[in-house]
Amino acid sequence: MSDEIPDEALAHVAADCVCRRARMVARKVTRVYDEALRPAGLKITQFTLLVAIGKGAPGSVSLLAEALAMERTTVVRNLQLLEKDGLIRIGPEGIRRARAIRLTRAGRERLATAYPYWEKAQETLRQRLGDDDLQLTRTALEKLARAV
Amino acid sequence: MSDEIPDEALAHVAADCVCRRARMVARKVTRVYDEALRPAGLKITQFTLLVAIGKGAPGSVSLLAEALAMERTTVVRNLQLLEKDGLIRIGPEGIRRARAIRLTRAGRERLATAYPYWEKAQETLRQRLGDDDLQLTRTALEKLARAV
DNA sequence: GCTCATATGGTGTATATACACGTCAATCGT
DNA sequence: ACGATTGACGTGTATATACACCATATGAGC
Image (cartoon, rainbow over all chains, first blue to last red; front, side, top):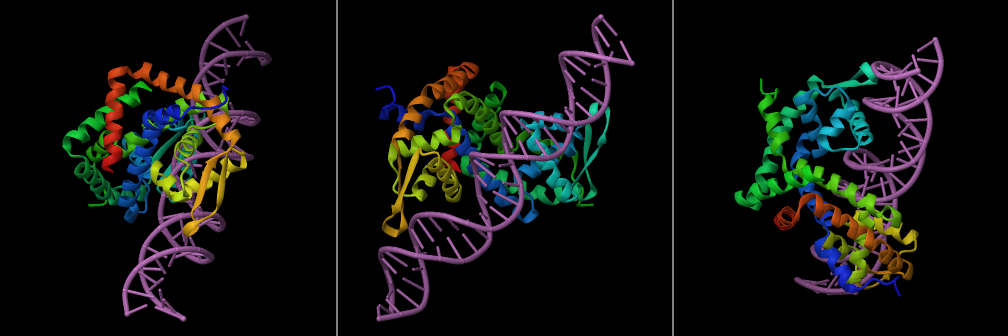
């Protein structure tokens, strides 16, 4: 019968699925950063967005989404939360309806507050992995992000 | 003023944040697998859960969550969806309220249907990365998952 | 000017994730 | 016997993610 799946196939998936591993890693790592950032009242997703906005002052939601490999509509919702908290300002529609996004003063202050906690999370990871494996991991994630 | 954050710090985060990279990778990879599995009517999270259940017939929700590095409560919601679709059965409370979880016949059939699509996604990634970088990636993700 | 392709944005809906909290069952120490 | 501890479960609430769909704006070609 073709509608039964052998145990070997299940073991193969469990052992070798790249997506399973990538998601497991993302969940675990996210917990470390979210916990570290808790005192700053930010989650790592929000912190990452604020950094991207502060760094590049993106001229549109689409560009911001592209830079972070996020769905544009996901960025829309996340930005709405940040704006509600007064951390960013979403500008009016400009050319081709594009909206510029920029940090507010509160947003910059929150970033400054959060930064040391982010550093702690990075250091936690470095200690748990060791310098060599940390570098290996960076390289691998970079290659994977580029390739996919 | 200590409430301003220098551009160098922002560049440092954007370039070196392990969590940012891990989440970007997870999003990108997830899209590949979700799209590949679409014809089977499953998302990669659901497929992964079904595989874990089919492989181990876990004796409790907590064990299943542990095995996949998921929050227990997340697993609870995801299992509720799978049970609603008739793909799994969540047993009655046993020792210490533990509930055994097992695939239904429909669940096994769905797994058999989905498996070739998962293989396609794996092959897609292998082609885009190349064998060497794929192995490198596996190793790095494995180390990261263990360490964190 | 009109039409159409393209770029940008937002909403509806559904799933995924996780913390805080409460509930219930088994076990342990006294 | 019984209170405290531990283990397991589920819900409330909030955020994160993404597809489907629709609305609006610009520019190209006619």
